[in-house]
Image (cartoon, rainbow, N blue to C red):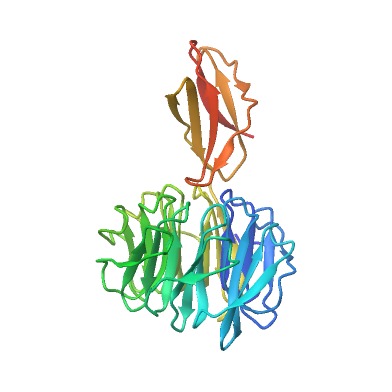
Length: 368
């Protein structure tokens, strides 16, 4: 369904882990960055400076936002907000071309940026964009993605090459991936599952950290301009420029089309559980817009023990749940667990440590 975002020439969109906080950019001289704090129900223009913004990324909690754009023939502007877009700081960095892609670690500290129009190297930051470094990646038209902790990076080039880094971009290695014109790439939180789009080709997926790739039943013949992945890599989405939106719920084994209109789709973003998707369309053949899709999540609770404690964890859900406990499943005596879980930025999971008791105890997540 179309959100209330204005019909601008949208170019990029980013989402928090729960899908509630969104940031979207439009590439014109005023460079507006719009913010939503309610999954796209309402939008407000932020106070970001006016430039030709080309890419945007978000931390898991939506507080740290990073946007980059063309500032001059000698540099690119990088703007950072640490308060969900309320205020922004900026610096001009020479990237050697348009910065068309940004990927962020879950905590918003580690960033990777690369050119998306014209040729550029790959630059990384470990301090939310305050400083940047380049570590020898060749000049290409890149798409980039990273793991939740920001240590594992994969870059795919339009000329058909893929490079991988396992040390936050300090060093890069050429991968043995198919030689196809890559346009977009995304990965699971641990960078085990990848999904990548191609220029008027098909969609590729990998389940072994990029060692081998397959297309399965992915449709072909479209420019798959943007892709997204849930934290566990099971729920994938891909948008085609001037075409459809396809989704997969089994890591790309099969793909389904849906009722999304055929538009000049340019960017798609996903919540951590993959049950909230947002897609931005450019204003080319018709007015641009931002659309949202929501399905009902069913988060699974993982329980491990050690050191006299229980560790309960679950992927950040796209709707509110509360953890409950019950010592006897023959009754309905479920009570709320009062302890507050913490967000583990390394795997995009809520975690809670509870003391291990001698009596049986059952746990569940109840939707609010």
